[in-house]
Image (cartoon, rainbow, N blue to C red; front, top):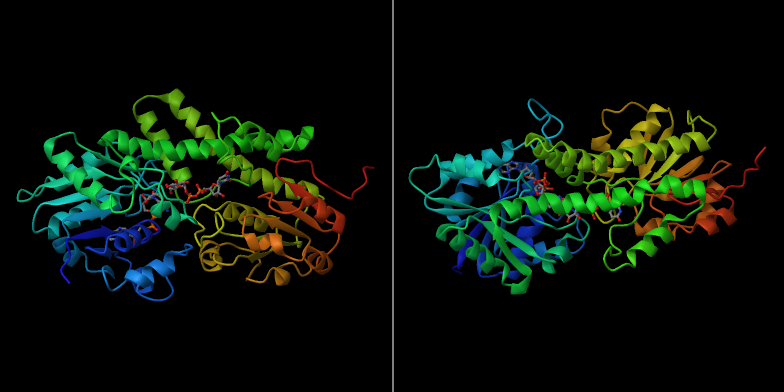
Length: 460
Ligand code: NAD
Ligand code: UGA
């Protein structure tokens, strides 16, 4: 069957894979080719064991793979065949040189642009799907201007999906943002991208804008979301002292329609590959324009998050008689949030490393993220066990630390768990997902986030 057009995507990660799968699923008239340099990743995209776990993803991939969705390492072929090329490569925090630890490392993006230029056989529309610093399109255009033969129009189309709900977010987005230069070529190119999304997204939800607004809106959206979590988390230590309950506070303030109730869930700290790196990038950009006050404001969002993770472990040490040495801690959850196998920047990494520094024995339970957990902790000294069985993890454990809000943790038999543990038994619920009163009744000493602890210890 002949296709109406061919779309390629460079980068088959958590964004490129699911996004292109949904485009292929919703647009059977287009051929979609997803390319990556990572051969193992591509092999898994072509297998039954996809490299990304997302509810609903397997079904969509099964439906369209081999029909109009193709995963390959053949970059040259994909570039030649496609009229529209999305770039969805990683843009991590720079780990060297100027801007180390703050700026976005654009080398993968630049490499993708250079490869496009090298293999192109005609004019192409280049779509920035990766999250980039504002004015990155200029940098990409600069690279692409090296081609004297063809014209490459760069369009910004940031992605707003959240992991764990990626398929739903892609099928029913709050908005799709497409920014371009406001020249006839820029507007023509962005209309081409509008046409793709129009296949399933209502037109009024497809927003077109100036390219710099589009780039900055993505960084700003992530900064605002993270800022809400840090705002609520910043109040949790006060709640624990004065006897207020952070869940009640969240509910009470969230009922104000001007504030809204989302992203006010107190936690052990936000994780994920993007919030921290995108805020650091925003701070770096602000500083580079001399906007120190604005930079300091956003930096605090990251600092509060670091404090929240450290505070969680310090609280465990303090409450467990100031020593964790040789005590067994069952860590419930290693993914940075539920319904994903992704562990990048997960609060669990910081917590487990600190527990091991205290010479605790750690037993990690996670239904999807153990493979990544093992990679994250491979160079760390200490005793770590990995299991998918929570009852195995808690055997002779002194404490449980809940770090990911997996549904399965809510449904466990805590009477049995209590029996299996050493006494006194502690639960530190870093996600406030368990029934604290019931746990206390069973005999646990319970330490939620932002609520008074429930303990059986007498003050002497
Ligand atoms: P990822 O690391 O999972 O995937 C990136 C992929 O790009 C990797 O598989 C890598 O091998 C590949 N790659 C790098 N350079 C390449 C090249 N030159 N040619 C071919 N392949 C190359 O990253 P991700 O989580 O998918 O994020 C991608 C971008 O999307 C980032 O800029 C991120 O900030 C942004 N983003 C991520 C999310 C999310 O939820 N993960 C959401 C919105 C936006
Ligand atoms: C986030 C944004 O929600 C997406 O819109 C964005 O596209 C994406 O970053 C990105 O650019 O990468 P994601 O990191 O996948 O998505 O997941 P979130 O649901 O935002 O959760 C991030 C972290 O915050 C998780 O650790 C989560 O547990 C935590 N969180 C979230 C809280 O602690 N409290 C909340 O109320 C909400």
